[in-house]
Image 1 (cartoon, protein in one colour):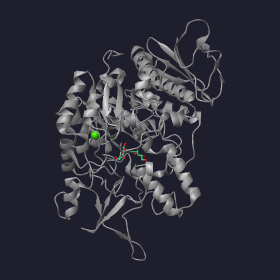
Image 2 (image 1 turned 120 degrees about the vertical axis):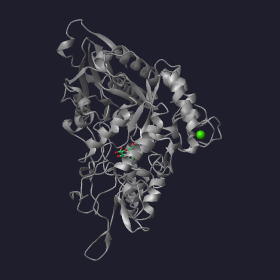
Image 3 (image 1 turned 135 degrees about the vertical axis):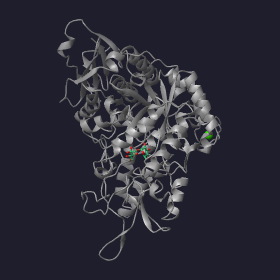
Image 4 (image 1 turned 30 degrees about the horizontal axis):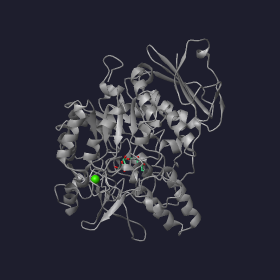
Length: 578
Ligand code: TEU
Ligand code: CA
């Protein structure tokens, strides 16, 4: 990796490739991706021009939330492999000059973790206070009620009644994911040792930190404001995101991480002010290297509940302002930012922000999005399959193909509330087809062989159905095609290194804010300047040349249409060097 600016941290100019172990590559025909499968794909990964892999949770887990419910931080989920396999992977990455980061999931554990098993066993157990326990409240009719009205992120109350000790415990996510009590200093130490230092000592280079802004809850755990009077639970982000002690905790955590010079990228949902984000990522604060802001990936989601929306649910002006809010974090500050459009919690970006209506538009819009991602400032993240332009599951697929708890909860809730109303269920399916997390979890499409080449044998049955389009959309086909999305991404990662001054570190400015079809922005580095023009519509648009392009002081660095003309074709993009 060529550092673009002297004295900058290595991770600023890095491109990080995210791997979802269950869906990446199966080595032993059980239909589940595994660590040996990742090891065997490292040459492919390095061929993309990336510098780091981020591995989603591979820890021992009952997999209620696909490993984000950790039962033991120091063990590997058996179908994925062993701790020894992880050691091999870490070494194999380092031999190739790749860094490797893991997912740090410490807002909650699985209810199968031994800490929780002890905690729930009695009120006097020494680990009782390691989780958040509260007695019931009783309403006017003497009926038992949860301690407050918080809604879980997966729907329903965030509190679960536990019969053994007759108290409720808090779970911001699913029932099987009890929240850890971060106020207990002994618990925090145990987390640092077991979840962080165990792996740092084995050589991992850092962590993606799950739900990093939820550890500190508002003192007293009071009710959230009632915004939805018809419901007995309420959206409660204001009560559990960015709580009063969060920055103290993160500084303490950083004391441990800095002993290993580890990088961190924290997940920072529901934090919408510049000031709020800066508190996590300003270098002077010494908390996190960078965070994921959700402005862009939340586009089109329902305000109160993500599935309560209709496709596409956003305008280009919304997208511009979402991009701006992540780019402005570094303007005149000591902070750093990230660029991403996909991860394991999102639908595919081509479906959401481009077009998957025809193969031609799919390929072209995937390349246009690659141009946008590659020219924005910050550390860049590519999610497995994004580099070949994978798209959401087909509209015809029924709920049986959806495996994620977030999706199945929503469908079941709709069916219960509406008494199986066919129209409502059809709407629910339309929402899932748009926004379900399942889309990013379909098996990686390696080849046109059976099951997309995900498992070695054609008789293996992948844990999720491969997308029907794999015969024409796969790595093998694209590797030998210069015009493929994959070849284009490789070109963009090369250009991003070459023009890091403007692409990675440059100052971002929108030039056509009111335009609802075309997104034009400039990136000014210390030595180079770029102009990026992206037609986000499926129609021909006028190319409004900005003043900077008068004369012959510019050249087209890259584009996605043969012989660009005076007009912009549907989903055409151009990156121009000035
Ligand atoms: O996600 C946390 C999060 O805030 C959301 O992205 C959430 O998954 C989404 O809103 C649900 O609709 C992280 C992980 O990325 C996710 O996979 C886990 O389920 C979650 O934490 C719990 O650990
Ligand atoms: Ca396997």
